[in-house]
Length: 367
Image 1: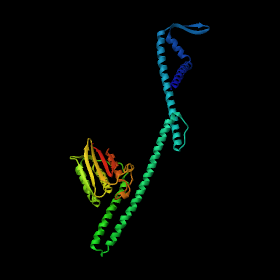
Image 2: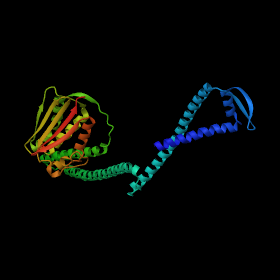
Image 3: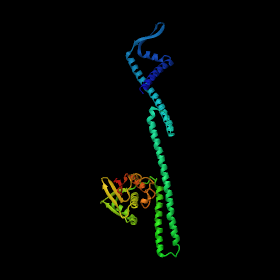
Image 4: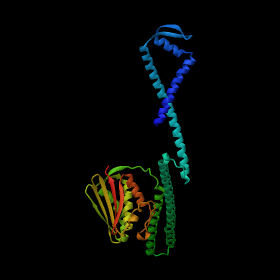
């Protein structure tokens, strides 16, 4: 860079001299006449070696002013020339680098190997990293689409089963000769199948709505104790088949700052998950407390232990645990949706499982 700048100074100086010479020649000696008029006093024309010359008293003080003017003018000319040359050189270099990077991107994206260039090795590494990330994102999207298609197929098959049963029971009930007690039993079965059909329909809605990220948050301060009591009361009918119980331990004046509707959905998903995977005749514990500037809710159930590997997967979209371990494997979106909602509140949702005791911990900031 220093050599380039020195070359620019040399070029600028030569240019300055050439400009002066050009002006003098073009104006037929005007520059020389200017110096004669300015620097000499009491001038007279004499013949020297047969050539007319001008002789007079030399004014050194005027020469100083001229030299200052020439120095300033020369300096400005030099700087301006350097600026123009440098700007053009940088633009040319920038265009060359952009063109070179474009060529290298095309080569790298086609799995080729570009020519080794020392100055561009770091850029090559960055390009390769970006291309790998793009490829990974594409693969993840493809896997996600495949999982989604699998879940849709699974739910479509499951939708047919309760619907067929409902039609069958209703056809039987249409016969007036069916005894009253049998009618009551069949009606109860039709109702159960209808509830199951509703659950599967909701899972379809979950799949279609999951990617809608722009749901606005309406955060308010919530009475945590009353809120959790309402959620658990709605789920009491689901406890009966396994003879489960809720045990709440909520500290007094427990407050939560969140969107009530979205938080209700999170807790509903977590509690239903606990019910599905709890052993019979066990207790589901619900803890609510405040820690510094955070509201903490813990939901603990006893059941089969979740491995470390599975704990890393349970919050992924469309991941479904083995249906033999619970009542229903679902669409694989419940926990993924819960985690996304909590993260949109700038909170955290985590899970741990020790000796069959699984705990989901929900942490929300107070503001």
